[in-house]
Length: 176
Image (cartoon, rainbow, N blue to C red; front, side):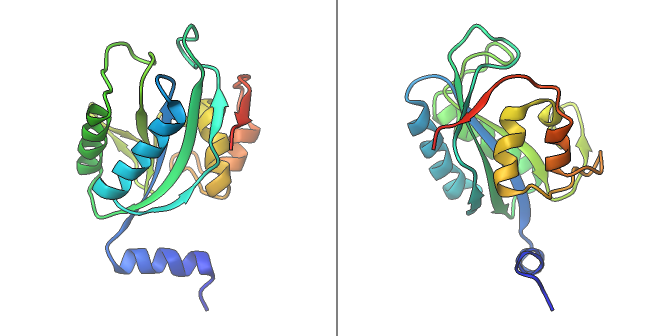
């Protein structure tokens, strides 16, 4: 007998759908609207959003002298390969006005691939799982909303365990 979760993954596998966890963030313009627009583009260009976390606010990480971010985690089903997914994400970001000038700088939208099924990819162009996710509570808390028991394929730990062991001290607050 299938549990609802196992049945969902069985059906996705049978339909050749990949389970992708994405993280969206914005700290310029109307941040909430930017996240909503990103979600609409993701559904149009990548695939249906199966789960979405609450929206969280946090101070900037890395380069801290910039506006606060709004962040959200998404579970998306897609037929795209990892590299096709990256290309679509970058196209969505450009359409929304993202300009890549400074790493970890201000942005109208940022869409990161956190996980792609349970694959591990490490190339110059793409790293999956996202190499910094376990250091960032603004990524881990939204992920815990939608996948607390998800196991990191490289570390063998759940999202809950990664959060419990995180050394990130930035406050992460629910917006809605």
